[in-house]
Amino acid sequence: MSECFKVVLSQAAPAAHWGNADVSFAADTVIIHMKSSQPLRQIQMAARKLRSQGINTIAFSGDGWDADRQWSFYQGFVTAKGGHEVQWTGAEVLVRELQQRAASAGFARDLINDTPENLYPVKLASDTAAWLSSLAPAHVSYRIISGDELLKDQWIGIHAVGRGSARQPAMLELDYNPFDTDAPVAVALVGKGITFDSGGYSIKSSEGMLGMKADMGGAATVAAALGLAIQRGLKKRVKLYLCCAENLVSGHAYKLGDILTYKNGTTVEVVNTDAEGRLVLADGLQAASESGAGFIIDAATLTGAAVMAVSGQYNAIFSPQPEVLALTQKKAAAVAENVWPLPLDPWHKDACPSAYADTANSRAVKGGGPGGASNAAGFLWRFVTPQADWLHVDLAAAFEDSASALWAAGATTHGMLTIAELLGDE
Image 1 (cartoon, rainbow, N blue to C red):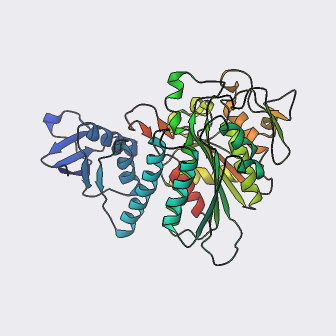
Image 2: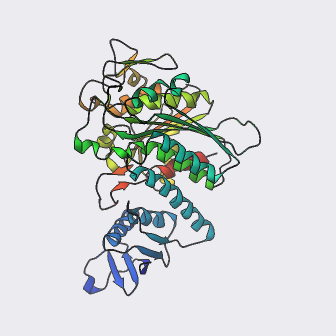
């Protein structure tokens, strides 16, 4: 094990020979000099600096280390290569919460950072089911529907997107029921699980394809959030639907001009095979609607338009219900995550017209045209029952293509805590 450094917070200025530094050292102690009006960002940036200097093991020491500050440090400290060790501080309940966060985020991070060769659709579904089952063996049941079996259940979108790959597409249907009775489903979670996205025949550039192993970030995020909520003692019945596929080019791949007829009768013209996430989520949202859940939450690395609108520092959120947006903002703020609502009006359902079907899956212009994130949300809205509250999370902040002052390259897991908080809301 590498040398362990104590990390303390100080309001004092550094010693003169450190100049105006944010971080100074004294023997085996690291001092973060708190002088920013944004303390969590300063702490996370300090953690990135320390890790880049070869410090791999730290212990929080002294006062001021609440949950948000320890977690911000941790998020800046971890890297895709691992090799880190963090010793939490505080009361037993606080340490337990942070350990549970780290375990859940670690599960999601390992999935998102994995190679597309190792993590294929059925494996994403089975690994998720195995992990969640290990957390509550008596309360978790599931099934994995794959290949042509998807057509028997009329999960048209997942099958179409995934049929171009030699590795079968799949849907994971998982039921967490902590009760002894057939309780009503309180929440349904839906995650986009595209284990690699080439763009299909609307093929991406090499640069644009490099990070597409992370296009299953929505699936990893909702699964990790459910896992965290279970570890916290969740007393709600929750169903989880992961829509898993590889979007590849082959003689069997779906093509521009194809028309998909979904289970609810909606017909969709494919005008862009790189707008595949909404096609698989449509199946998951219909399954979630069939569960009778009063609240449906989906998460997806869905659009570049969301990144352009809110940057990689926020996740974009959408809902037809203003109270859902307000609750999500409140819950995100409580765990120091960033969300920002973008427009969603009924006319967004018709923002991608087709001459041949009820709707197209995008607009036949680069990036889907103006308002692309809202148009994608409007498409998804067609597949959500009006009886349920609905939250769509476009995970603009889920992945860093390269290291920044706040994050190492790779998965951030930003969004997991917000969804876990929503699951625990009464």
